[in-house]
Length: 278
Image (cartoon, rainbow, N blue to C red; front, side, top):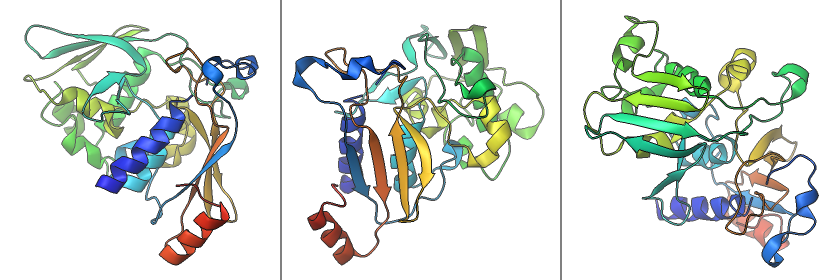
């Protein structure tokens, strides 16, 4: 568990050193003497099992997916017991502790991908979260996270899962940038649940095209696939919405490469050669 947290911290650190506009001109003179560019090579001792968010139950898959996808909120990279805004800029919880209202940022875009018209990723709207949460609450072997996320917590989730209802009543789209989630009873852990893979937003276009093989998100890195060296390659998202404390667009690094070397001796040799950095 300690190793998992350490690796997650390092990867999030590089990602949060992070990107923004499509013309890339901001990369020429970053504030604070910071530098854009380079590739970070990370080794994982096991292969990932799935990159479909609602099926992720292992640390390796989580480490990779965390760079591709996002939700309303996220864990603080310096203190994973704290929750911070992500696609939601802020939220309110009513006096009963059962009604959560999230206010989404504008100009947050899905990754460019052929599933969208002209291959251009579109803006994320509140309806995308409604769609995604209904997907999470759809009865399927690919949705094991339903049990530990919305089941017994969000109004209408169980009825939607059983097929009794065709809409997830507890999730209400107020407008394009406002989403309301209603719980059955107060749940102190609900923000933490939303910060995990169960809170991921997915584009209906991408799910329709790729199904459970989807790798299209809104995160700091874009999935580019696996190469002949059994490496998984992610490249920086040129329109990522987050910035660092100085206003520099994130992420700083150009690409993130996951290696999957199981043998510890081989891993050490690769580290000595500089083929892996973590």
